[in-house]
Image (cartoon, one colour):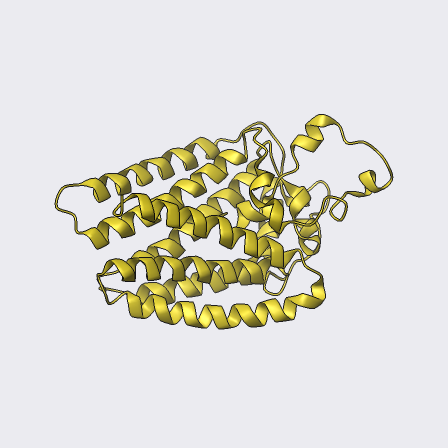
Length: 285
């Protein structure tokens, strides 16, 4: 239980609480963003330091420290994006009638600076922890990055649940770069490959003779990857997942659409689609 159960519960709690915190901060009034970003900068500096230092130790505590640091670094990066502080040179909706190739190019521009920053951080972490015995923190950051890109590509290509209603106000224009359709060819590939990798990680953690610290690290990252896979399924299944972070989101009256404010009733199928795109992109992607 200590080797496998607690790491799973720890990863679940950190995923749930960190996602909720980012959602809460990003939906506060814009005047609070400077303080959120200032606090985030402090957290980013501490978490980066702890991740690098802990990578030199192959202990169980170091595995937890690396994992927590990786999630916190990612959370700060996502907060900087969803507050609009670090996004990209394009902050306007996609023009009507764009071809898929042009829409993709414009979509890249909406988050170009943020993506370059993430690539820079990933390279920094890889180089800083190269040949160190504890790679859990670096794995954590890379898994979050890759699964976020997978979710973004699926939103671009088309899924049933775009969840645009819970995008922060400053990023509402991102809805115009997404497509709603029953399925796209990338989705089954994304989910299948991620599931195979996740199964291999769990198998490695359960293999005989594996050190406790290594098993804990594998279970932590595998749980996070499993949650990212689950979030992919939220994009296509009619599952009302908003209750998971109800405490972190604006009240419905504050996040209502212009049609709702005018007293128009949304059709049931439209109401069912109201989820959280911010979480799929952020996060935990």
